[in-house]
Length: 107
Image (cartoon, rainbow, N blue to C red):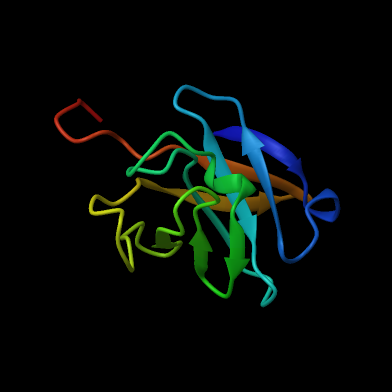
């Protein structure tokens, strides 16, 4: 588990970038839900944490590719490949991310 920040330091409608390898973007939606995805757009090297959040979608700041935070799937072109999603929990007011296991690697 990776500690990201205090929940109170991640306002609704905002995101935080975690400098892991690969980087992770954590989003706090206006509805109060928390999601984590790989931070790099699969279309081109752009930080999704710098994109525009609307509901459960984030729009890439470069070419307007959009990704569903719940599934990681792109919802429009130019992106064609999904981003990985990660599990988010809050414990004692701290946001934590458990990284998804890459396909083909041992759990």
